[in-house]
Amino acid sequence: MCSTCGCGQPDGAGTRLTVVHGHDHEHSHDDHEHAAGHGHGHGHEDGSGHGHGHEAGAAHEHGRGHGVEKVIAEPETRTVLLEQEILAKNDGLAAANRHSLVERGISAVNLMSSPGSGKTTLLEHTIRAVGDRRQALVIEGDQETLYDAERIRATGSKVVQINTGAGCHLDAQMMSSGLAELDPPDGSLVFVENVGNLVCPALFDLGEAARVVIISVTEGADKPAKYPYMFRTADLVLLNKIDLLPYVDFDVELCLSLIARIKPDAKILQVSATKGDGMDAWYDWLAKL
Image (spheres, rainbow, N blue to C red):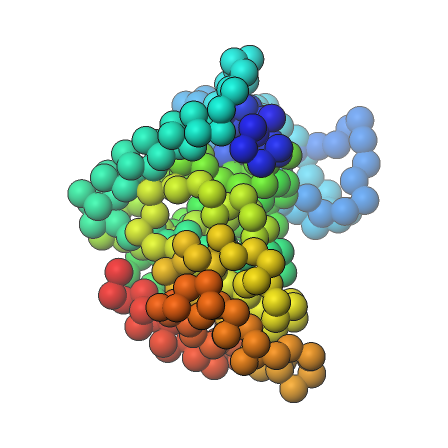
């Protein structure tokens, strides 16, 4: 169990890393039925692993080597007594990640938000918009499923899914493992879609170049006051889904004032990833990384 926030398991135990791609594999369900579409992870003879999904009821066969998902860290039984020890270890790994990324001219952007804020939609549009200028790749973080990773793969971007099991955040070791599998080229742009919540992801440095917090107008305008650390550590705040403002009870001025109270020099952009409003300013900000 994570001793910092009470979630997850020690040192990535139970964490699964899957390289998502689109080629077909045959596999069967002789011993069970599926009521819904789902993803599969499987391994290859060279030791790599990846996954793919299918719709509910789709006919398919299982072949040799399926059902194997690559575990990026083996369980350990060591008990960690001090929160500081966990964070110190994480910070050391994050520093190594950052040094490696900077040396290769790779910019990593850590996207953090509550679930449903529109991170994946924002990424889909961003990858398509900036892809002709700078290759964009993605590390996806979710407790379970490959759903978001499949959406990213559909854009043509290379993506690695990290499923954290009971964990509610990515850490520097997961980032390191994800980068090793993703193998981003020099000069590229790596987006990290962190596990959705406004608490734990802010505590763990991944070695990223920038942190972006996304809040949508379908959430409460008081979120910055409730979760100040998340907004205090942000390099940029995106207020998303502004096209829905005529239909929701969201006090923009209150939200902006609360963010300013927490971080007076906060950079804030109002966008609609779905409709495109304000997205050019977001792309301009990314171009400066």
